[in-house]
Image 1 (cartoon, rainbow, N blue to C red):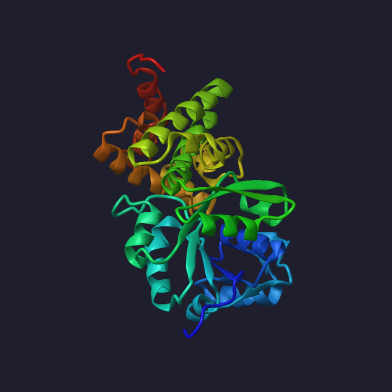
Image 2: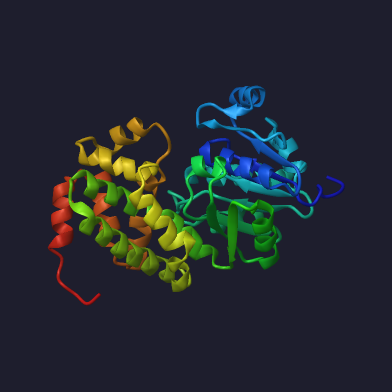
Length: 337
């Protein structure tokens, strides 16, 4: 590539519900060309013709400013900034596919949430290994449901990057009168919050499905926040990050609203389905199921006490009955808060 693509141009990689919603918001906010890419060429062409993502966001029409492009190389070479919105288990392959086509000035952000299954690494570590130190990196996370973002309802989230200029420019690029982005330099904290909250949401869904009431739900949220913070600090994050949008904000939203896929997985497990059947019933990727395994391994390696996450893991992967998992939590030794 002889010269960098124009400033303000951005491409969203991943045409699921979250990628589509963010592409709509970026196009709506203006500031430069916005393109959406998806790996299913036929589905993308169908979306382009209909100007709607019928499968994931059937009520959200595409703005005129949003373009769709099925060729990954053309997308990467034609945009300065890339926003990766793929499930966490596809993150490494996506970054590896993008890397050969990056040009001077390219920058990469993502809204993928979760630890890498095979290694327990956070996305910024994976991206740094594949791209080296010369490519600015950022992560978007916070209390957001794709359907509400696509509908233009008031929303706030966090953009974290070690490059403050990248965080500020991306926050400005995506913000408008109904969408507000805050900035942070704590990528580790923001990523840990985005991963752990999905596990706690499964637990909250199980609790509510078992009719344990509001007291139990709030105890899970509060103590889940403590677990999230402990793991994050052990990985080098700042404790105060977990009081923000990407920590407490995202945790409360995901645990309390039935738009959350992970909460709905918990509700289905409480009704008697196993984890695999519950995920099939939802029909979409539920990141908390994958995160539970990865966090189990990372917490064990670091010696971090995460009893709620551990019991969710035992339900998902060891066949422990939800009632027995609750009994194990409630019978733990009493200790100071």
